[in-house]
Image 1: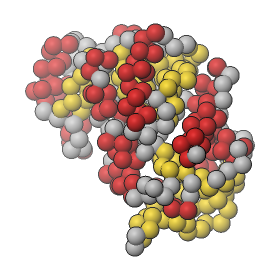
Image 2: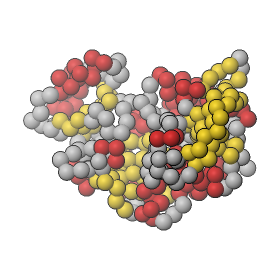
Image 3: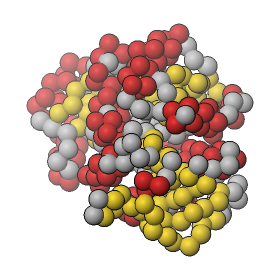
Image 4: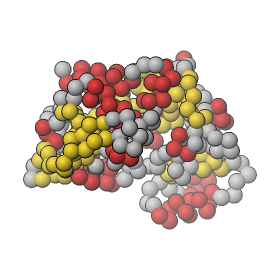
Length: 311
């Protein structure tokens, strides 16, 4: 098959951690041809969805993870599979790419389905499952956020469309910075904020559970660095081997049918203690860590699910 990857610069990936690289590596091993382009090179041209990019070969060489061919102009309808894999922020640029890729329906399989990626951003899809999540408020209004903090005391405040742990603050019962942080965030963004009750279990780790076509295949635990509330590996979180609990499986059983129905093939959910906090559909990570800990070929299972859909 011909496989296209819409992603951030492939030449700068970490070959031992990047999930897009691992997906490309497995596709290459299965005999598929790989094409790479950045989201800035995606275009609508008089009825066609096109991209300017490179046919590529990936390799496990730290400073040269991909060998790129000459830059060429392709019609994406000629691809069999297109991976939507650029990282957030989930802004209008990102949203526009989902609208353009939407137009390939019936011509190429876009993973994850861009219509539902657009309508299911990570911190909003969880609102469909309030029985699984910690107390949550989404608001731009300061008085609403203050009221939530007064009710729950110790809270986490973060941008609604952020990623990688950027802009995440813990405000405990004695904190006096809420108004200043609200002023800071609203000064440069028109977006609401999300505030959740702080979960002390985060000190034991923030579990990333990988689901393929709605079914859990395993998990890794991300433990925050000392003195840090964020467990994201981007900011020093330490990945550890961990198994799935009955509560994890209960959460996956509740959300799995929705993910499967909406074409979300590769999803990473975040679980702290007994609570679901995010459902990551834009560019989830964790494949390589899970493969190292559990010895299973997660990337192969993802491709098997995709090949089954195409069949």
